[in-house]
Length: 340
Ligand code: TYM
Picture 1 (cartoon, rainbow, N blue to C red):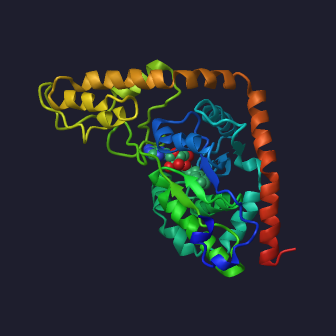
Picture 2 (picture 1 turned 180 degrees about the vertical axis):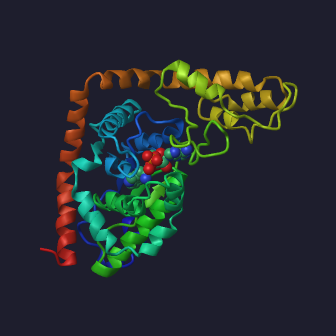
Picture 3 (picture 1 turned 90 degrees about the horizontal axis):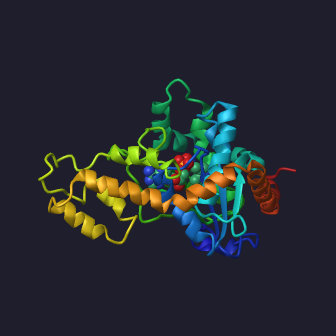
């Protein structure tokens, strides 16, 4: 897989990992939402057995919009606890915090020198972020995808489980790696995205992608009452005005979510179509199913958060485990580029 995409397959360096390596990053936004889990984390968990998997909490990226040190530190630990609670097993995969392996910032700088600035200015997420924080258009926002490319390239990962919103970033990562390989010789595999069955999860508004900055999330590890409130606020089929109107499950976000929380979703959809059930019934059922589904994870999350020493040890071990991989890449890159 790694050689197929490389521009000069004949020049495949022996330093590429034999088994495809998985890498993905997630911002330390505290407790994850349903979009994170259905769109990405479920795949992190599924892939940890089949591949050498590395998962990172990207606190350097978060600095482009989180400026409170206490918040960043707390949310980093919360995300670590959440990932483990949701099924990442530190014995079977590597979980680490980005700033614990600062080599990535060096690789980011080196990648900056092969990245035309026009590529970055055209990135849709850059335009979005500029619009979201007009008073804080820091350089980090522009170079954000270069750091992401460096994240993936540092362990020479070839597969990247992500949601669809990250597709433009992954495309840029591929282009950056290709530019590097073309200038300095084939060093990195061109990474490919791996999507779940829910690559884009809509928020409670039923219109925008679920995201913390939009405020339309369902927080999967929150207390049951919070989840109930969030689910009950969901917008359903906007054309179904009266209880007796037939519903359209194919356009109803609540009905769509039922697909991931039980095998009987077609029955639920039929109830909507025939107006046997109302939107409120369907939402109540969804809330209870989400609460039940995440109950064990909620418990583990609580236990982990009560033991920050254990959590920090897991993260320290993760950063230590990938040290040799990272150092080997950096030695090779420095040599290829003419650095000492
Ligand atoms: P982040 O932290 O915004 O999201 C983490 C993961 O969750 C997915 N996701 C969604 N999937 C479907 N529907 C949604 N509503 C939804 N919201 C979030 C994201 O696609 C992502 O996979 N830039 C990245 C972090 C990053 C990274 C990397 C990812 C940094 N370096 C290297 C992969 C590889 C981000 O902000 O994700």
